[in-house]
Image 1 (tube, one colour):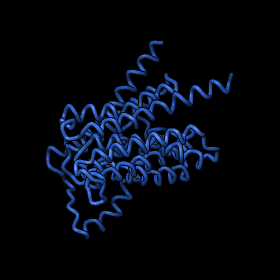
Image 2: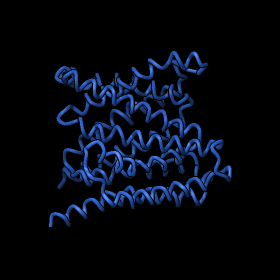
Image 3: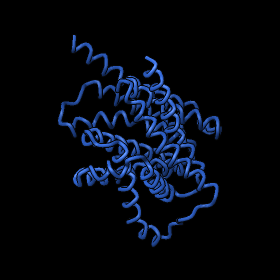
Image 4: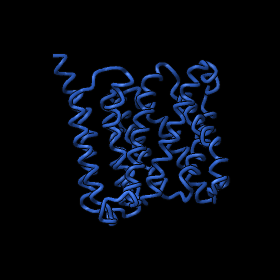
Length: 305
């Protein structure tokens, strides 16, 4: 019982740190590709300092390494969209609220990947998510729905980020099996870093401003992002999962957008920038995040009886 309580505390801390990534994304002045490039190489380097890391890496076969290096490209694209949403919309809350649509995308992608029948309750979840997005769009400070609006463009980036996160999460679930979580995450960070590095000459040719050595404040924030919100948060999550059920862990992890939005209100006073419709829409999307695992548990228990 004591081990379970400690696990719950660790999972809450990890989830809080995951939610803090959006805050750091807004504080860092770098472009989204510059930010993600630095985050991935720093996180990769730190993982190499973990005990017995290279022993575990050598024990991982090449086919598995290749799979997770490729999934790392999806992780990089997800972060580009997520931080692009924050930069374009100038709002961590908007990115976190739209990220809540990951529940819908996971429900749609998982049956395709695992070749199982889609559940009817997913359609109900989908209707609620779409209604929530419509309310968030209505909160547009430009007062009209237009593809030229930076707010609406940021919304689309946030939804894309959620889709990509759902996709790589489902693929992780399929391929992770008995592989070391540390090695898996390292390979994904390294895969994303290599992918962005290959694209970098193209972006530099297009005139992208890129800082290989950021200023002191950005370096501090990047280290916090990579070490505290990636390496440490990940390690806390893995430790917590040893002593808690998947249902409890999912419920706690679903608090990430709520923690992040609360931090955005406290740190950036974003409640003054976003109106009533935004919070109603965000609340509706967050509701689906909690309804989904509860419905799953209820229906599975009923089927067992």
